[in-house]
Image (cartoon, rainbow, N blue to C red; front, side):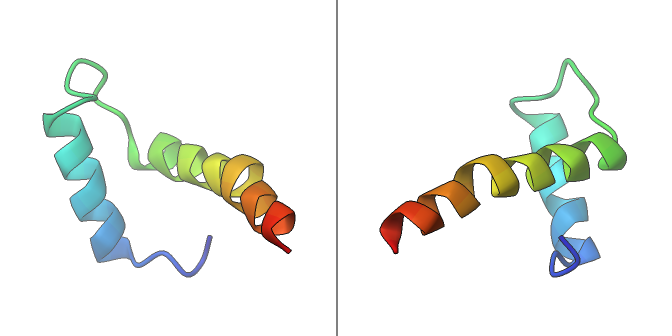
Length: 51
């Protein structure tokens, strides 16, 4: 989503690529796409259930 700050994403991707995703070397494009999918498929669904 547009509300994600570039510096925050850069830092999150850097940390992920050093840790859990070290063997995958994930690109920023893939990282953004995965984050958007998690928001759409998980977080928004949980928000809807909570209403």
